[in-house]
Image (spheres, rainbow, N blue to C red):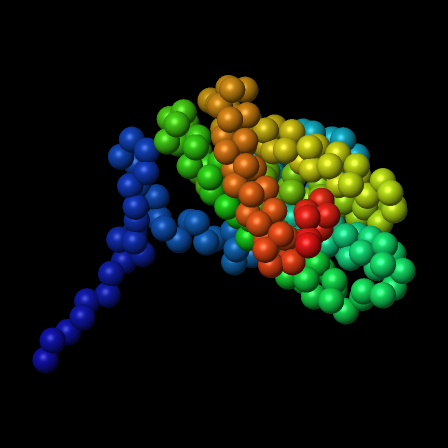
Length: 227
C-alpha cells in the first residue's frame, strides 16, 4: 500500500527577491486575526483629520490588514449611499429600488472590483516598469486606507454640486494613493509612484465608466455616467 508522507510547513515556500524564502502562510496570517473595529475607525478618523503619517504607519504594521480593508469597505459603502441618495433626490423619489440595486449594491461591488485592479496594476507597474520590489500586502494596506477617503463622496447628495464633490474626492484619493505608494515602497521616486498609480487608476476609471454606460451600474462619481 502506498503511503503519503506529510510535508512540513516550511516546504510550502516561495522564492522572493534575492533568493530569500518566506513561508507562503505568511501571506494569510494577517487575515486570521479578528477584526479590530476600534482600530479601523481610529485609522479612518486620523486619515480624514489629515494625519498623513498614518499611511506610512499601516504600511509597516501587518496587523492592520483587516482594519484597513474595513476602512476601504466603509468608504465604498458610504460613497454608494451618497450616490444612491443623489439619484433619489434628483428623481424626486421616482427611482428608489432600481438605484438601490444598481448603485448602492452592484455599484459598490463594481467599485471594489475595479479598486482591486487598480491595486494590482499599480503593484505590477512598480515591479515591471521601475524594478521596485514591494510586497503586495505592504502596498495593499496603505492603498486600502486611502481608499476610505471615498467616504466624502457621500456629500454627492448635495444636488447641483454632486459632480464637483465626487470629482474633488476622486482627485484627492488619487493623490493620497501616490503617498501610499511612496510609504510602501520608499525606493520608488515621485515619477515611479505617479506613473504606477496613474496606470492603475486609468484602468479603474475605464472599467467603472464602461460599467456605468453599458450596464447601468455605478457608484460615487461614476453614477453620473449611468445611461
